[in-house]
Structure formats: structure tokens, C-alpha cells
Picture 1 (cartoon, rainbow, N blue to C red):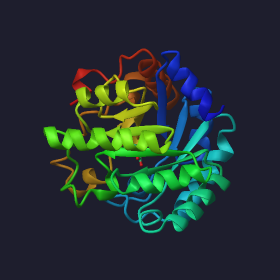
Picture 2: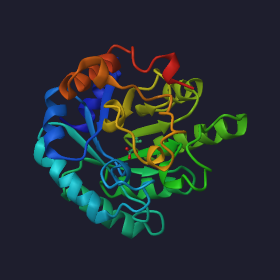
Picture 3: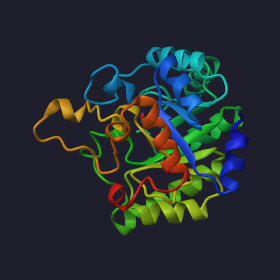
Length: 270
Ligand code: KIV
């Protein structure tokens, strides 16, 4: 499978199903169930390492998990997050780190943010590194954003995300991923930009969907550990495991519902 094959699927009207994946066993299972993209997300800082956010994840962590995911899935596109501190300050450092992720088995890297990150995306793409731009709620900026909050609610904020999405698309990224933005904004962006969009809490009109594997299984960490009594799973999360009774069944149901546009439903969107 190549990135261009995914673009063709989107052109033919098929939705893309993406899940986070951190090891070979799950990678094999997800590949067998037809997941289109395995995201080696820096969410591993929370769901694997037990931290309250993604900020402490290192390049070493990402290289290790990318390598073991690649060991389990030989035919599926693997996207790896560039961790906090590995790409924001220096274009050459960003390129060296991105290339290391590709050498470990990723086909594409994901960076967070619009604005000045557009130049970083352009630099990586020009040097042969496929990029996904992550807009809306960007977990590496959780402190600046004041917590896990929906983004793009005001006209100005929505306009900024729209401009960033256009700029990233023009810079040559392969995907724009949007997290926790109003469904109408995500739909407008999806219809306007030249590249496929992936949503998480961004409505059903995106070209594809992504969920954190543990969320799909109803295992919550990070904010849930901080205050278990007050914790409420985010609106866009659905526990497919209780519905199906097995991990394999949960992944299969997720892929099926994404492809059939029954997930996310209105109640999972903003
Ligand atoms: O790291 C991650 O799991 C992510 C998803 C929330 C999209 O970036």
C-alpha cells in the first residue's frame, strides 16, 4: 500500500479508517481487519507510559514503537508522530528526526500546529518526507490551550484553522488531521482543500477518522488518572469493545462503521 493508494480510495468515495497502534501484535491484528493507517501516536506517553500528557515522549520512544509496529504490519501505511521538541525549532533537526522515523518503518510523519509550522511541513516535503498536519486541538500545546478543549468555535478561530489547512495543503502535506473542531468547519475544510482530511472529534464529513486504540476499548488514562471521579470520556470516543466482546471485533466494527459513515454519529461530534 502506498500513500497514493489512500488518496485514490478517498477520490473513489471510500472513508479511511485509522487507529493508533504502538506494538507488533496490535499492528498485525489491525492490518488483518483492514485499518488503512496505523498511527504511532505520541499519545503513547499517556496510554503506554502513564504520563498525564504527551510532552515527555522522546525520539527514542517514537523510533522504538515505530520499529515494532512496522514489524507487525508489512502492508499498511504507518504514520509516526514527531514528538514534542523534535521539529519546532530547527528545520535541519526536524528533517534529521523525520528521516530517522522513516528509516524505522514509518511512511509519513505527523507534526502539530499551523502558522510557522507550515514552513517546517514545506521543508520536510521538499526533502522527500511525507507529512500529515495536525490542526485544531493539538495535544503538545495542551498547556497553552488551557486543557482539552474544542478549537475553532469563534469566527476568528475557525478562520485561522481554515487558513492553516489551506496553507498546509499548499505546502504539500499528504493529509490534514483535525482534532476537536466543529463538524461544520471540518466539513468546509474537507470540501475546500486538495488533500484528504482525518478527523477525531471533527464530524463524519472528514475523509477519514482516527481514534486512540485504548479509547476504542474503554481504557482511559491521562486526565482520567488525575481525577477519576470527575473524568468523563471525550464526546468523540466510543467504546466498541463492550459492544462486540473482543478486541478483534471492536477493531472490525470500528472499520466497518467508519467506512459506512455511521461513526462518528452526531453525538460524537461538536
Ligand atoms: O498521538 C495521537 O494519538 C494523536 C491522535 C489523537 C490523533 O495524535
